[in-house]
Length: 64
Image (cartoon, rainbow, N blue to C red; front, side, top):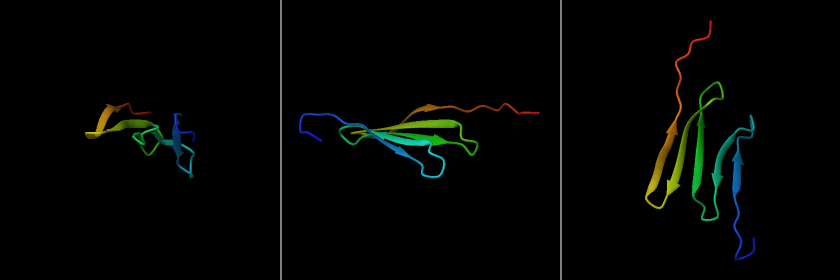
C-alpha cells in the first residue's frame, strides 16, 4: 500500500462467506454478528475509546 493511500480490508467467514468485519486504513473495525439462521443481529464499531455497539436488530416473529 502506498504511503498516502487508504485501504479497506474485508474479513469473511470461510465456512459460509458471510461478512465478519471491515477494517479501515487505521485498522479500526466494524464487526458484524449474526444469529444461527444467518440474520444480522448486531453491528459493533471500534474507536480509540473502545468497542461500541451501533445497532442491534431482533425480531420475535414466529413462522408457522
